Image (cartoon, rainbow, N blue to C red; front, side, top):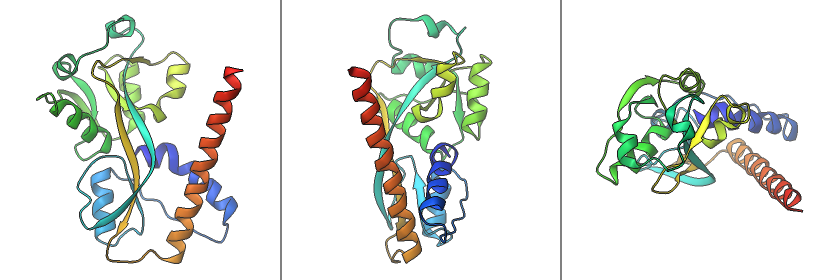
Length: 212
């Protein structure tokens, strides 16, 4: 869903400009369902964010993403100076994505390494809904850094450090191991790589400019 809501729209707009004869249909689903769709042949390409089993599929890392803990500005954690430990996070009810989402899977795996489990305050099916819930002060959440830039900039969400390092994940494209990619699917993948490469060059350029 992070890919579908925050990355794919730009990819498809750029794709239309680069290859206007190529028509793409995008279905939105969590990572678990995307894997099923590609395995069943209902989708030529899939984009997943978690670490679910990809048996029977080929995959390629497109980019890396960081997950961050966010709270409302009036939440007590918004002003704390020490990172939140895995034990604190596990003991705190959170606003979570539904089971099967890549974001939740990475969070659960991170806590499991310390023998811990997540505690759900509420489960919601979209990142936008989770952000609104956190802004209202319902509970903290762990979300992709890609999805919260505007809310953090506007002061509607505050990021909070986690004690045991970053929560990171790979965003992958997946396709069938037994079926060759069609010429159209290869064109889509080539164009998406070009868009990602352009963004990385721009990001490095802006970073260099800010250091001068």
